[in-house]
Length: 428
Image (cartoon, rainbow, N blue to C red):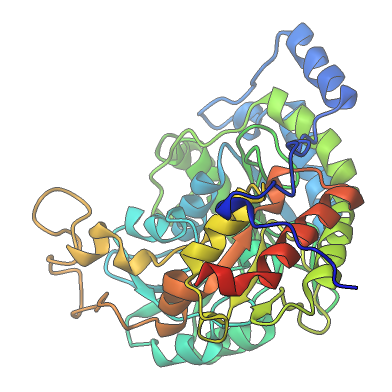
């Protein structure tokens, strides 16, 4: 007896998912009480932009930093008011000079690369691996020139890059490494906490990340000098260096990148829950992978040996040639079934107008057109073929950060995929 398959929703049939899933919200009563106590104290921030004890912030800021040091197993944790601020501070703290080249992934949020431009350095885009979507070490090494001074590594979607290989490349060439682990806190690479293997790394505390304080970021490092310079850049360095006795004035242009007492009080409570948050998302992702594993032309996420995945995104790859249906049509069919949070493609930063026109500061093409730029750096289409093909046709992501998924929710997502795959021929 044949099983009757309901028509696809995109062709007039009933939706598979008829009710919205519960949105992800990691804030509980503990965070409410912690914030309330800070508000009642009247001390919402205790930072002062001068060289005295409050230069380092108030009790919640310093308490959160000490707890982060213990949790991530590092000598220094430095809080900032956003992860964009953290990336800017990190690039400045490692001593980047105007015109220096920094190798970076094109497959990331735009702030990763613009943090390089902030210091008038030059982003050089290397391609990514097709398995994890992190920087490809072979492409990184091929892009090193005499002007390369650092590598900006991105642990995208929640999976670590190949840090052993990348750190070895950096050591051979005398380069610094910054780890942008915004999307992967609480994960591991060969027994080490992801984000802690670079010279400086860190995590985002933005509202849809695993833990959040609304906005914010945490920088981590074992290097005393880098940590000191991070704190200076965070808090009006130029006003402090004289009294502090700092003699190396490179990049001692300071900002107000300070995180407040309320946010750090919330962060202290969130940090206690991080392990559980990551485990919950891993369980949902593993169930989703089991459900999708046998669908032809669909590759679920790959987790490399000795690595764990935080699943900020659930990244899939389509074999559109095998399926015979373009990604846009498949996406539309899944969305019609009620699957919310799908993303067709992700990013190719080198193709943004700023890089195509080489115009960042002012109207004259600075810094590329200036004497500080040592050579002609190409951002033409084709320099990152893996990232470009994934973005144009093959990558399909599911934003796991959007919802707190139950087993029943995951099963509905699987059912929607199965329904679309069973009738793929009708989409052609």
